[in-house]
Amino acid sequence: MQNYRISVALCTFNGGHFIGPQLESILGQSLPPQEVIICDDASADNTVDIVKRIASKCSTDINIILNKPQLGCIKNFEKAIQQTTGDIIFLSDQDDFWFKEKIATMLEPFQNDETGLVYCNAILTDDALRPTGCSLFGCRRHMHINEQRFAHQLVAGVGVNGCTMAFRSSLKELILPISKEWGHDHWIAFIAHAVMGSRALDTPLMFYRRHENNSGNDVFFETGWLNKWRMALKVAGIADYTKDRRHWETMLQRLVEISKNKSLGLSNRTRLNEYLIECEKRLEFAQLREQTKKIGRSRRLLPLLKGLITGNYHRYLHGMKSFFKDLLIS
Image 1 (cartoon, helix red, strand yellow):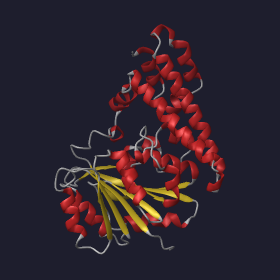
Image 2 (cartoon, helix red, strand yellow):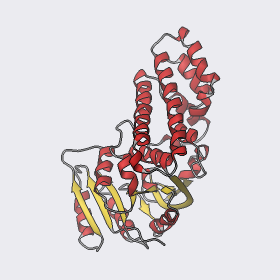
Image 3 (tube, helix red, strand yellow):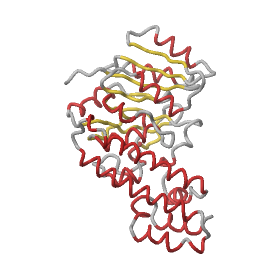
Image 4 (cartoon, helix red, strand yellow):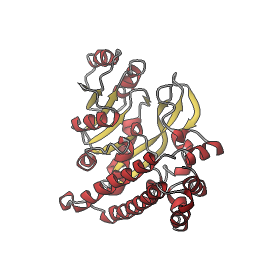
């Protein structure tokens, strides 16, 4: 296997209750990383003390960066990624637990030079790391994240958690800075899919801990018909439609910048062009929805029918549920 320098970018904030076991699971890998970059976002608990105590007893290079002022989650990960010096970068949350072979297993697909991103399955647990009987991929079967994915599927939903991913450092110049309109993990995964190959590993390689501070953040973990309707009807205010439009504006802008940069030497511009076309379609759809949201219900039908006839409601959203939501809900 090719020798890679491995970096882990780990972000913390008031994670004293969980950071010890997580950091020790990273340092105890069968193939440990050469460096761990820890960016703490102004924690008010004992997180930093725990990290320093563990760092003083290990041979791995641990770089602890203390943010002042607080950056927030997205910019904290951006800063941690910027500081890495490895060939392959793993992202880590503060409250999970890595299985011993995670790094070694996820490195194997990188032997293919076309692979830019690898992400793994994870076992969902409660706050005491007791398995719930579900996995990340199992909760997202409808997103097909463990299969070969196409541009329209990624546009409909990325569904990749940062704590499960590793990517080549060559992607840093493409993904940074990270748009504030996106979550850092979906931003990275989307761009990586657009410019390089990716691999999803169905084997769970970590525990994904859910607790009171994070359990409400990912509605994709909820299943059943009730959640499908809740997802479809979740967005109703004009601010959310504007946010959706900005979301796709920023991604399209970044992909255009990448496309115009001939010095990057991308090996598969056909793939990038497919994502550009799909982003343009998704942005046009977002603009249509935002515009119709600003007019009365009686005048919405004809413009929204365009989105239905073209298949965009089924391609990107929740089909008829989303259509009637846009038509009837103020």
